[in-house]
Image 1: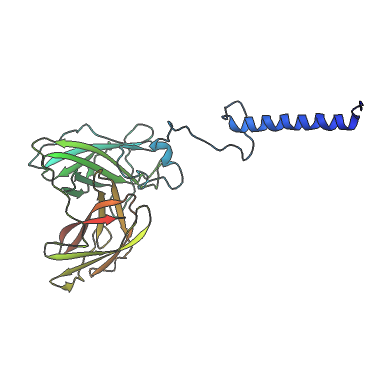
Image 2: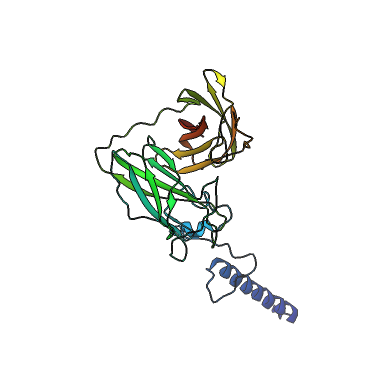
Amino acid sequence: MFFPVRPTVRRRALMAAGTAAVLSLTLAACGSSNDSGGSAMPGMNHGSMSSSASPTSDAMAGMPGMGGAEAGGKGLADAVAGYRLTSTDSTLKAGGPAAYRFTVDGPDGKPVTGFALDQTKRMHFYAVRSDLTGFQHIHPTMASDGTWTADLSALTAGSWRMFASFTPDGGSGKGKDFVLSRTVTVPGKATRTPLPAATNSTTADGYTVTVKGEPMAGMAHPLTVRITKGGKPVTDLQPYLDTYAHLTAFHEGDSAFAHLHPTTKVDGDHGGPDLSFHAELPTSGNWRLFLQFQTGGTLHTAALTLRVG
């Protein structure tokens, strides 16, 4: 027997079909890319990126938490956020003093001439050999045109990385810490020296430096340095760069840079024996630490290998 479809049933069927069609179109729109001609639905644009695409270092520098160190990430790039370390020096002579000349070019392509003070200096410059056996920390001079000259002591043959650490005093990078670097070659027969084993203590110029702390990669950890001499605590540390000790670290293999910021306040010429630092090392593995401190007008440099989990 035939029963005619009632109008109400027919209307419900049509409404269901229409709803399904709208839902299908909505899901299709969510799965499609968002082009410039369309407007994304609130909360539906997931910002997906193809596996072949990745943000550039300049773009990452503008992201919260991705700027500087600081703005230079691990310090292994020569350009970040529009700032570029430029030099015509690709080789430097071995066995004697050498001058490395460079500029920091801003987003406008012109050499930057305005830099803020950072630990009493407008530019911190480091020369580090690829096997981390060579280390120099100096403060170059700048000419009026923005050209810096770093006067280096004798370099041994091999590959060296030159780091420039600075804070622009104007422009888009004002107040941001940058670390940029380039490599140079020192001609001659290069011998690679294995990195000394990890330890928590070393000696330099008769001083014993002991490091306490177990930093983890990518996490902030306190680090304590104790300085003694002849078994007795050293309490006559003199201020050096507005602190009682300057501590930098470089990663084995790629020479990634890290500056461990001091947290012990300067209070006259009687620092020590214990100094505190804020350690935030981005990568696990072995790091070579270089601690610089001053007594009696003499600067001492102690180095040790620290294992980071």
